Image 1 (tube, rainbow over the protein chains, first blue to last red):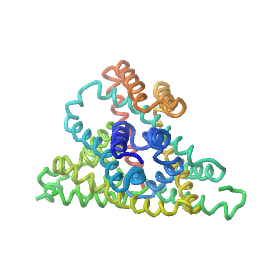
Image 2 (image 1 turned 30 degrees about the vertical axis):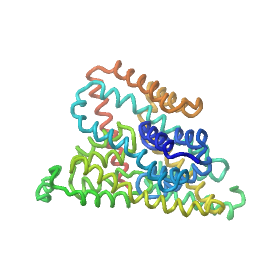
Image 3 (image 1 turned 180 degrees about the horizontal axis):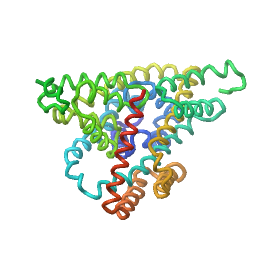
Image 4 (image 1 turned 135 degrees about the vertical axis):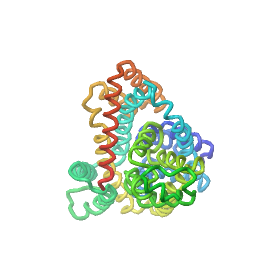
Length: 180
Length: 216
């Protein structure tokens, strides 16, 4: 049984490292919670992530489930505070002095240098989800279909995500070519 | 009084908006934003419905939110709440925005906890994750469409992707090594004109992304 104190520092660390948003920090979250601390399994990590996809608001509220699994309601609360509070305080402090930073030549350098880093990290987050969810023809087709549909037209993503879930659940029953 | 100020399309003065109203507004935004792109829903309430911010200051706030670690939509809530009512306003905005999702995810987590052996539940969640891969790929592609064709940017993208994915380097090492190198390369290579040009590009990109978001 993990102690809440470990939960707090792990998620506070993830909070500070979340350059490029929640997706960017997914591989590190998986590394720490699954491989390093064995709090949850790979499958549970994927399922919690999926629940976050279909819940309203920021998808990353799924971190609460990891806290809940590890030490109940107190764990969920601890993770919620640890994951959201550090970034909020940082934003509160930095945005108040942003105008002073505006004229610094470093500011644009930081923004332009960090943009490709953030994109690379988002790509690695995408790969981390893919590794846990794409392991047969059916799941590969679902990912490809969503990708093509979204490039073609602007669907509401949550509808496509729900459709993907239903397709994986039902398609193998209907067409025997597609495995589970 | 608050309405008089908003009618002019200018940000309301800090004392004009109550904490309850901030909380309630962000609660609504948090409740209806599904499937990512939460920033677009926030814009609806912050710029269109309440006229707390004009488009330009909203983009400024978004730019800061993206530059800092953390979720863009949560960082944006902090900035808007703080501008409207100080630190407590920021707290009200974040709590309002995150609370609906937190409640739904906890409820669904409890249900899921009891259904983990149900194959249909498992299959459904695998399908959701697979679909999310398609979604995340388009987001990364759209965000980085300029960076993917610039050799220096592409090199930095591949370095950070490869370090995390294949070399399994801890994220803090990547951020302490690759990020400062990237920033230094840009700082060194950037004279005044280039900086201005890039700042304009960045702004256009934000605007483009912003438009893309509000289309759904």
